[in-house]
Image 1 (cartoon, rainbow, N blue to C red):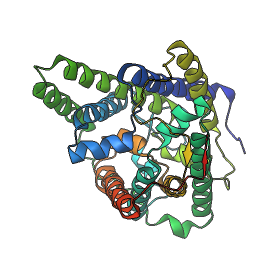
Image 2: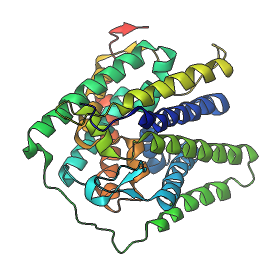
Image 3: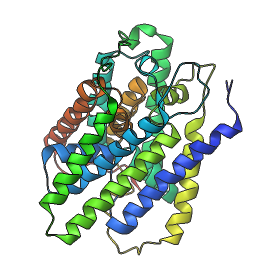
Length: 342
């Protein structure tokens, strides 16, 4: 099952996990919050009160993605060199545009109902041995494994492949314009507010670090994620285990180094509470992950590279799912029933 896998390959995966954990801990220590790519995307487009620093966070992720693609290029089929991106042909292999849309809807809806995604639960909560985060992550993985394995077993579920290179006349380095514009607008609007400028630049830097960690860990290569989730696979790749190990080790060290007082409020941190709504959200998130191998964070990272498919057929549906999740939360109303607390 581990054909072609060797221990040397674990080094970038663990390094990526360490970088992800560093971004999370720095965000907690400096900004007193845990930032999720999914909620940041929704916040930026809805222009709420947090949109400035969240859009700067997203700009940092996109910037590092553009930089990496300029420096390292793509990974062709059969290429054994570790690169942050797959070729267009490989990236769109095995998943049709309809499946990307369905995946985005499920992931957006699930992250809103669960009030978080992989950054919050897998890379922040688990290193703190938070019971809610462990249950949430296991639920996502179970549904992700079931969905990915089912789709691999029955190719009819994969939809029509889109291997045509839609952006062959577009230089992807023009994507640098997007994070530059976002950062410039946010800074210009707050030029007389030093505290806001500092927060914007800090968010941009943390987004860049998180993006670099995700790229190093392999999350921009969606087939790597699907190879982990698909149990009906003779080339099963356990990369995610080493990413999580790197993140847990880094977080445990950094949490002790930058210990936060228990009385200090951290925005977006796990609550330790298990609810049916959270479990439903995690199951939907996992199902969407098993379809595309993408998360909101990895979708943002690959959006400047695989134009215009991801921007048209994945990310907008993540936002639509988030909107639908908000409407469903309002419809359900009240305080979610608690199954167990930590």
